[in-house]
Structures are given as structure tokens and as C-alpha cells.
Length: 289
Image (tube, rainbow, N blue to C red; front, side, top):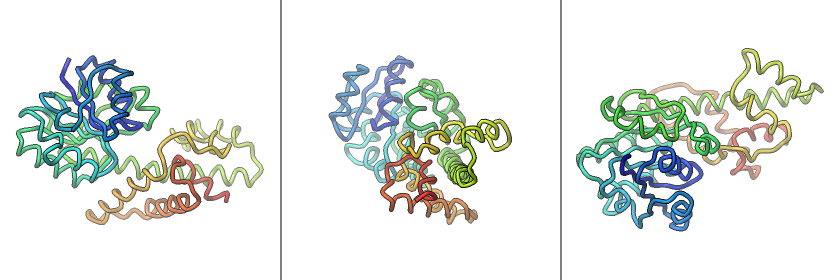
């Protein structure tokens, strides 16, 4: 059992912290910007909640963050009330936020000044993956630090991998989002085409999902897409945030991402249709409007 702090109790962080408490058996203190959410978490799982990130992180062996974006991450880690201000030397800061590789490297440097270790560890698997404790976690950092933290992360993960130095976890998550964007657009076009052709989409997917076209997106999203329901996962607003990070990194490293850039524009169209909080499979709605 370790002393653990978890900062950020959104749709992902709330159940992830729960698994660290219940499955991992760790001594947990949580912090959330809206204190009512932290109180709700303590009522459900036990443990304690703190008034600032620094207070939550005090004396912790591992401090986890899972917030919205780069600026949110800086606000809960840096400054007088940030997590690093309360962390003891030798502790490990693990960031589960999907953020830029740039901010990961920035936090690594800030952590080093405090004698604290750092791992960037974005996750994939969505709300269902978080609730069921089967997320995929892509880590960037030193091997020795990863070896220390992996057993703790295992409480909410199905797969945990070290991808390279600090920043490599975020870069791997960017690849994950690139692949998802292309897959969902392809699936949306396929379903749209099948409908226009008068085919039974359920029968079509039953067959093609067992072949080379099969994917997680097809297996888990085709039915709700076919029914025009888009309330089952990662929101369009968040996907656009992630794709913005991807495209900014591509401008830095020279990668050519024409399909990703196009799908990002398509998600912009979905936002304009009022679908900011629809899930990412709502690309089909754009084709059917």
C-alpha cells in the first residue's frame, strides 16, 4: 500500500481514483476544483479530500493528475498551491491528462528542481474503460521510475507501456487519436454509403467486422451510429482539443497529416450543428444532415 494523491475527478479521474483506492488498496487523498465532487468521491470510496493540490500531495509517494488541458495541468501542479509545492523529494508525479509533449517536458524540469520524479501517462479507453479499470496507459519517462509506478497504475489499467523518455507517452497518445479520427470517419462513410445503398447495416457489420475492416470502433459504435445516437463516449469538444495538440506537434516535427486535418474540420462542422458534447462517432450526423 502506498500513500497516493489524485488530482482531478472528472469522468475519467473519478473512477480511476476509485480503483486506486478499492482495487489497489492505497491510502488516497483527492483534490478537485469543485469540492462537492471531492466530497462525493470520499462518500463513495473513503479516503480524504484536500483543499489544494499541494495539501493533497503532501507526504504522498505518488501523485496523479487527470485534468483538461495544458493550462489546467499547470494550474494544479505549479505555484504555491500546486502539487509540486507539497511533494516530498523522491515522490513520483504521474500525469494522466491528454496534453502536449511540450508541457510534459516542462513539468519534468519543474519536478527535477524539487527532487521529484515525473511520468507522462495519458490514457485511452474512454469513460467505460476508466469505470471498468481497463484503460491503456502510454508512459514517457525513465525505466526505473516506470518500474516503481507500474504496479500502482495497474489498478485502473489493462495495458501499461513505457514508450520512451518524458513526452513519449503524449506523442503515443497523439498517434492513438490520429488513428481513431481516420477510423471513425471511415466507419461513418461506410454506414452512410450502406444506408444510401439500401443495405441492412447490422448484417453488413456482422460480416465485415470479422475481416480486415474490423475495428474497436466498428464493434462498439456501429449500432448507436446506425440509430443516430451519440451519447456513448468521448465528446467532440475533447477530440478537437486532442487533434489541435496533434496538429500543433505535426507542425513542429514536419509530419504530414492531411486526413487528420480534414477530420478535425469535420468535427468543427459537428460542433456547429450543436454536437459539442456528442461522442466522436457523430461524424455520421454530419453526413446525414
